[in-house]
Length: 190
Image 1 (tube, rainbow, N blue to C red):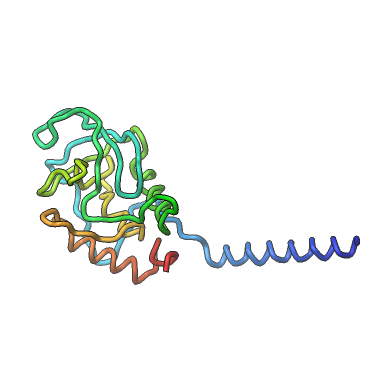
Image 2: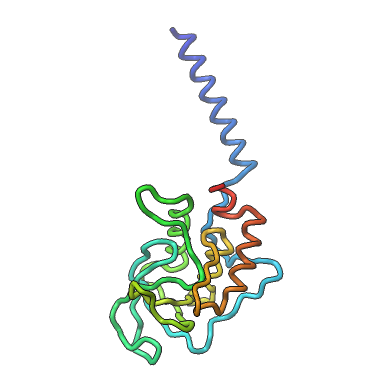
């Protein structure tokens, strides 16, 4: 009996070493990043001059959150909390069951837009969708273009819905680069 326990422990230790070595040689690439995701040959637009500040209330999933405009303005004449849908992208859906990559997309958005943080928002053509969510492009307070970063990290795919297509070419080329490099969901979800 003692030899059997020793054999099991030996196999477990060897297995742990093999798994640890594999992870060391093939590290998990998290979609969350501390630095902006760079895509060679792609110029990411700076925050537009007409962007307005909003405070993040909560993140729902990888492309939807709730935020409050810091002051009513011509673009958004309310100071109430609103639902926001990021324009030009689509992330895997959370649910039961969630689609592959959904949790990573949500985590990445929550990292870029933590509760209480300031985001800068800009509209395209249509300000709302049929679900009365505000359709926005978002930048972090330090200038990172959130919609683009989610695509570049492989957490979102490009999705142009007319007439909101100001950055459709950017998102499409960025998605192609992420797919080619098997980044995020493109390397994990098949």
